[in-house]
Image 1 (cartoon, rainbow, N blue to C red):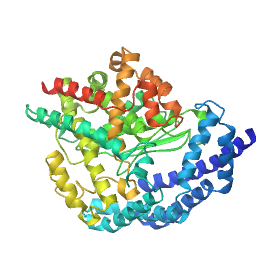
Image 2: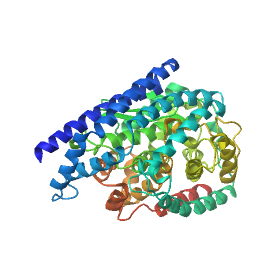
Image 3: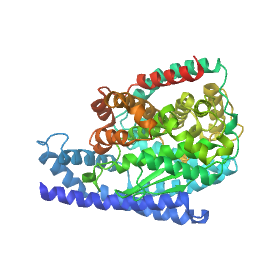
Image 4: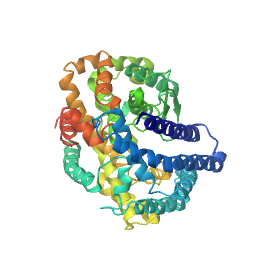
Length: 500
């Protein structure tokens, strides 16, 4: 068994290296690559994807896993060896259903689509992106067909990001959240609006950047194992245990864009940096799911970064960075302003009370596209109609509407629900953290985050993919994913801010 495990880890190490190499090329594409490099980059990434896929579905991999599944069956379910075989076998069985030709073509299609999306977004013209998205949707339908029989065409897409979860399960959770959030939004809109006019002025880029760096350094981001760059759509990427990079986007007229984006991506990076080093170069060294990953980014961005204890410590520093803009603005006014609830067009800049509505809208559109009840050419009109229905706004152009997210150009269907699920998990974990660290707010007021980060590393980060997401949440909090803690958090927070 030891010899076979060693062979398996060697194979998995090669696959990990190919994945990391592709990730470096993708990072470069979104940060520094000139637009003219798109076609060649597509070929390069397609080759790496094909090589990775071939190693995954090789007969050697299949034979090793078949033998090791039997030989590790007597070991505890949470032992490294049995977990490694179980998780690898799951990935292997999924990949063997997908032809290498499809993987190669899909990589080429999405690489070109990402460049087309950038241009289309710059010009607010969906028609430039439409043919690329039409091919992506067609290929995503093909992908689902590889996994028949399924209960719903969306299930195989969702399973890639949330192992074990079904479309109906997510819809049921969202059906519970939606009416409470709509009721909360209406209650807020019936009260006097918060004044955030002082945020509508110029905030120089370098000062924004430097303050964000100061904040996440306090959080515990290790600059010896990471760096921050600019990207049109912020993301985090991991190349290994010692190289986890983040990106952000700066808007000199919107202070929160870079600040909260930096905190958000730092949350992802802290998760990747906290994974058990023993899992290095294996499938276990990944987050349990995208919802669990998103729970970490949303926790640092919102539950920490938009909290009053956080700003009691950091607001004097922010005033030093922007004395003209904020020097005479009281802390309480600033706190209310950054938590202002107002339906807006851009998801990544949405307030906590409306954010999930953005996600629910996208989920419905993705399902309609895959079911065939909505054609890509009709997507902008459908988007605008749903946006008006959900948020009371109609986007004035495609850049502020259907083209705002990069995800569809990357071929990601099934990804968006993880954002809202991550919100729910973050609050569920937050209640448990407060029970275990009673003076957490006091620590945050002093700019101390080591206990919080230590708790997350002990209870969430280090496990990687040892547990499926629902198993991990239940192990840590005592129950599966539930919206109740998040709804309690939102209603309590905005009751105080708006005097509900």
